[in-house]
Amino acid sequence: MNSNQQPEQDLPDLLQIRREKLERLQELGVNPFPYNYKRTHTAKQAIDRFDELEKSEETVAIAGRIMAIRLMGKSCFAHLQDASGRLQFYVKKDVVGEDKYDIFKLFDIGDHIGLSGPLFRTRTGEITVRAESFELLSKSLHPLPIVKEKDGQTFDAFADKEARYRQRYLDLVVNPEVRRVFEMRAKMVQVVHQFMNEWKFLDVETPILQPLYGGAAAEPFTTHHNVMEKELYLRIADELYLKRLIIGGWDRVYEMGKDFRNEGMDRTHNPEFTMLELYAAYEDYNFCMDLTEALVVKLAEEVTGSLKIIYEDKQYDLSPPWQRHRFFDLLNEAVGGDVQQMPDREIAAECQKAGLKLDAAKTGRGKLMDKLFGAVVEPNLGGPCFVLDYPVELSPLAKKHRTDEGLVERFEGFWAGREFCNSFSELNDPLDQRARFEDQAKLREAGDEESHPIDEDFLRALEIGMPPTAGLGIGFDRLVMFFTDQHSIRDVILFPQMR
RNA sequence: GAGAAUGUAGCUCAGUCGGUAGAGCAGCGGCCUUUUAAGCCGUUGGUUGCGGGUUCGAUUCCCGCCAUUCUCACCA
Image (cartoon, rainbow, N blue to C red; front, side, top):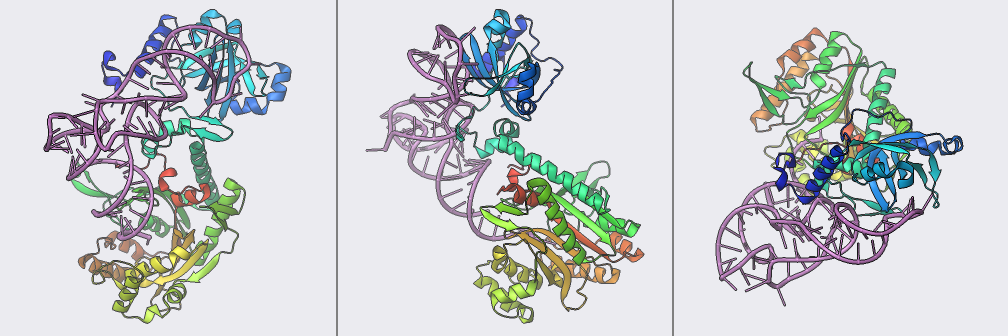
């Protein structure tokens, strides 16, 4: 497993040979791991400014990893890759001298080197550095997957998904399009912070290690603090702490950070994932719909430059306003009846008709309706759109609808048939909140492990008084998936969870 | 959690209807001073995912395990 711990003579050939080259270089007075190198250009800069650099015969100094070597006796073409791209360079025995040329021949694909010289174009037109001097910056002791390409066709792609996720460093070295995805993700993070700043939200940090979890319906990870001899949970949501801050007196707060849910993993779920949550005093869920549209539009403009986004070969137009559908309008239409008027067993029957396997006795009314919605409505929600006004049983932290009995003021945003955000007019009546928590406790006793626990400190905070407040949570990874057209959450998380 | 498929050289893959494995690239040696999937000649490299079983003999057949991928379930 760890080749560094193997005795020299047991090393596989490919590793052994590189160790020997390392020793030969050291014998020739080369430090294989020097301390720095002064670059004048990145690969991309050298290419972009080729015309002026060629005219001035200026010496450029670039540094990067050797990715291809084409040795032809007394001269050699090779490619250097840095964070900006690739650049060809040319090493000629006449130019660098015999001793240096012998050193160069000890270099491998994967080594980092720095080199300097003037730029020229080869006979076939490729911009190339004519190396006048070069130095080893880091000797690579492990072979790299060799990926070749011609006319846009890739050969021997490093494609094994398991190897790519587990050894992401190799994936990033060898698959440049993977780097692009994460550069776009970084850009999106930057845009979110900029946007939240413009909208006057305060960037705050709340605990990840919590004595009591809450704010969502999910099973937590449990851990243990040794000195306190106390069970702690990794947070499943930021919600209850952020609301405490609204109670504390800030008008607008947000946090972008990791949540952890102890549930199954699939294409759209990683046990740790990034959530953007925000709360705004004196606003309701209508504000959050406007904000969501504005944020997504800004992300589209800044990241892709277009409001038309292709995801899984389908085009989505993000131009606001997005369609807004009421939950029961959609559900009733899909079922062909008034679901709100149905007794529980009739809803359960509809669930069965939709092919859902569930234990109706153990599933609350709200959850039944939600399951049914997930089965008969969600897959057909192209979006982007909002679904609003959910049944109260599903939403223990949302405020009752101002006009409709049995509903709460809540919406979820959908795009490509998937939920990507969730928002409500926040419940700020401490008595109502206590009653909701107690309903959840009953569900828990009935066997629902994901029901919300009672949080007495949160109730006390509400009793101190929370202004009318709107809250919104956005599953950031899913948003990244949409904007980068990636179809697995593992492709937008650098180090996804592996078994 | 269930089902299906997959796991062979550093990478991408082939193959063996049971007789201990091949190719391309990479590597190593040779030729080659504008190549670009460089080319030509030669060549090294494998506990066939792990553990059992059947068999004279298993990489191949059987069982178990591990991992990955896909589908379903779970998961607002």
